[in-house]
Amino acid sequence: MDNLVDKAVLIDDSEIDLFIQRRFLEVFKFSNQLQTFVSAKLALDWLKSLEKELMPQLIFLDLNMPEIDGFGFLLNFAEIPESQRQHVRIVILTSSNSRSDLDKALAFKNVVHFITKPLKQSDLEVLKLKLAS
Image (cartoon, rainbow, N blue to C red; front, side, top):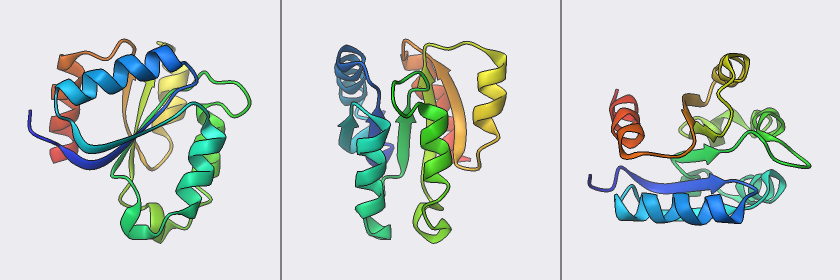
């Protein structure tokens, strides 16, 4: 798989999960640049500071995090001006396999896919097809 996106972001409070997911995405050459955050707040602060051209094309977001969880992130992300976030797609990457979490997450405009951990090559293949459409 050649680099699918130029810039991607991983948000997960587990440093172990971040390490594994980052390594996995690097092995499969998923993106040219990969930024990681251990909290939704740090990620939101960073995203809000970016110019439109510097926004990532894709965000992998965990739902179960302290302080601001994934849904809190999505609510705050929706407050970023539409012109700045319109091309950012969000993939939920979480340990939750709850149907209600899936439905709730997919109700957000920028959320395009839901993956239950652990991230697998088959997940990236499905995601590649979704992003291409």
